[in-house]
Amino acid sequence: MSYCSNCGGRLNDNGICPNCGGMSEANVKPAQMEDSDVLACVKAFFSESPLKGVEKAARTRSAAVWVTFGSLFIVSASAMSLGAFGTLSSGFFREVCGSRIASVIENASGSSGKTILSFGTLTVHSAIMAIIVMILLTVITEIAFIHATEKPSPSQALNISAFSLLPLSVAMLLSIPVALISSSLGIMLCMIGIIASAVCYYFGIQKASPFKRSPFLTLLCSTVVAAVILALCSNCLAMLFFG
Image (cartoon, rainbow, N blue to C red; front, top):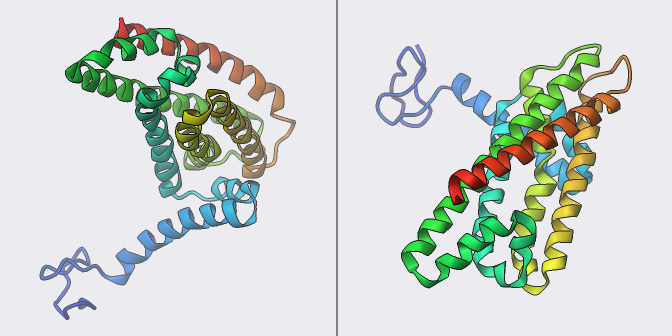
């Protein structure tokens, strides 16, 4: 019979204390391991090199990695909605998201109700686009692994896709205050984030498993198709949300 380390109460069959809600060590350790996987990837990314962080993400099966960094990417994309109202006058958001969306925000500036509605609509639009990007990237990853000698698990594919977007997530967040100073610098920062994420992504693919032949051509063709699909989705969503 096991007892709670917090209050000394007897644990139930599921290893949970009915008195204080404490868990047995067997239940606590898996959660601690998942947390350490996420922290290990972040630490390697910032303290060693970004490629080391991607390598750790590619070699772990912890779902906590893709959930954490996938959520960060969605939040970062949505946060650019907040920057839209501050940087629209500088032309940054018009260049990034197109004139249709920018016009909707401009027309909403005279009414607080319209502004709140436009802000909410734009946030949802940005979050959906971020989710579509992650789905397409994961599909491309699975296609690339066709040439792998040992196909990695779906969780590893998700980890590579989500963690490789970390540079872009950071760049999007930084571009909001930077664009207030210069729209060109804001756009340039986003472009640097895209390039850095692309490098991390390809490196992560290579580290996840040995390949019979280079996956570069497969990735290139898949990326072109995914870009077309993303453009169509973006246009359809813009028409749906902004008319």
